[in-house]
Image (cartoon, rainbow, N blue to C red; front, side, top):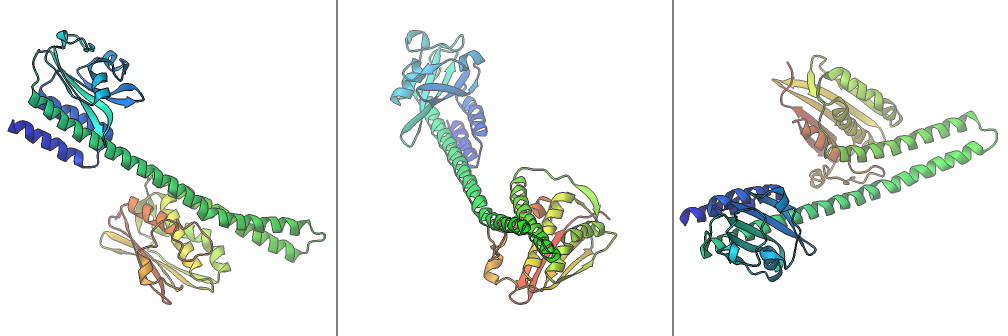
Length: 384
């Protein structure tokens, strides 16, 4: 008996961890068969008034596919009444529905959660009078453990789904206002172009407004797509020389830096190579550069420096912007935290952190109000 209780406790400890429903049912079958020594077992869950098989052992597929309504057979009666059943001889019990040849004794207990019956756990033996009242109590304990674990998993999944829906709502609210403003700018430009005899100055002004609005919309959409992508995509790592990699990003941002009166300084060791996903890691560095430029609306300096320390490499971005208050530093990596920016999704730094950590790198930020911000990405293992 002590050995059986140890197995029951082990199952409880196993299920106390975060498990999928499939893992829960698999381990439940393994442990319960070891403890009770049955030949066949099946767990059926209620769907309406039908008991649907979700896990079984020793039964043929045909038995699992049997349609059993609440009130039919021993399992159906247990599901209806909530009372466990111990059948010493199935041949003498008219309630018995045969699912496998040779079954002579049966245990069936309800699976109850929060006073509601959600299914049944049924075990059978080829020997008559095989099970005892003690076995019945043990199976009831197994049933309680399994049901609690399954419902916990369902609640966790439901919460996760709610959180995802909430994120969708935040995605929408974070970009719709800014996209609407940019679309309004495009409409104004359209009206300006309709006016007769447009001057070269007007054409140049309209061109710049259209270009900026388009870039804003494109950037916001890319932020949302990248944030979603980081939840499920794999990295396509390749060896990349750091110097040309940084230069390619600077080329994308050079015009924006010039328009913002921000001077760029780059100091990169041409010999450094990193194993990175070029597109994804490039997106992370680009987001950091964009953040630095936007933190200097009146102009300033942005330095991008890389260096080696043993087998580690660091990439540092240092700006002379407004800086960030200490109490806000821990929040900057949170999705939708915009730190007072007029435009943007609030996803940029969340994307940075996700991509950097997926690469196995770390990212650190230091900042003082009025003194600017320094962000350092460290790659612990590099190619020599």
